[in-house]
Amino acid sequence: MRCPFCAHDDTQVKDSRPTEDNTSIRRRRQCNSCGARFTTFERVQLREVVIVKTGLDGSEPRREPFERSKLEKSVSLACRKREVSQERIDQLVSGIQRQVETAGDSEVPSSRIGEMVMDGLKQLDSVAYIRFASVYRDFSEAKDFEEFASTIADAAKD
Image 1 (cartoon, rainbow, N blue to C red):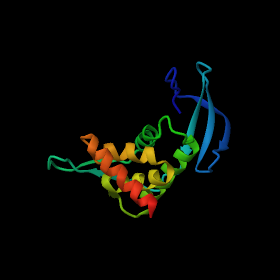
Image 2: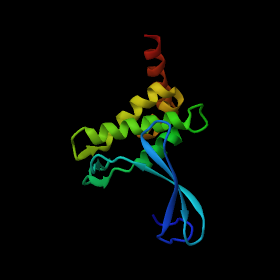
Image 3: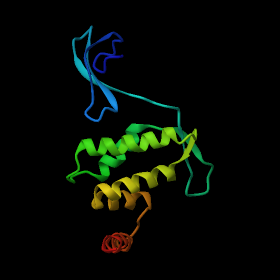
Image 4: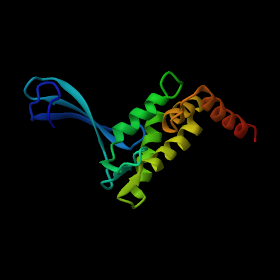
């Protein structure tokens, strides 16, 4: 593992333990060159998954590797300044990643992942759900928020 401070490629694992949700291994490492300490996380990757992104302008679809960090960043951004713990965010992201990797498809449309995030956030936090939906569904006016929020309020009444 390369040291993030001095780029030396010889680091030593000082401590390993599973994370609280048992989906990854947390490793404390120390660089043998500069002595800096840092943490890495090791997760199981069941298969290589490619995300297919379709352009809104009708352009050719783009393909890029699935990156957990991008998914985690977008969910965290939607949950920012909400009372949603990092552990719950990690559980949601791990669940989506597991679904994507075990689905059996090597190519997954980005829209399917977006819907999985929407479903997860709907149960996690309604404000985070609306925030994510506003970007995912490309809200352009305040009335778009009103209409979407009213569908959530109507569903809550049922």
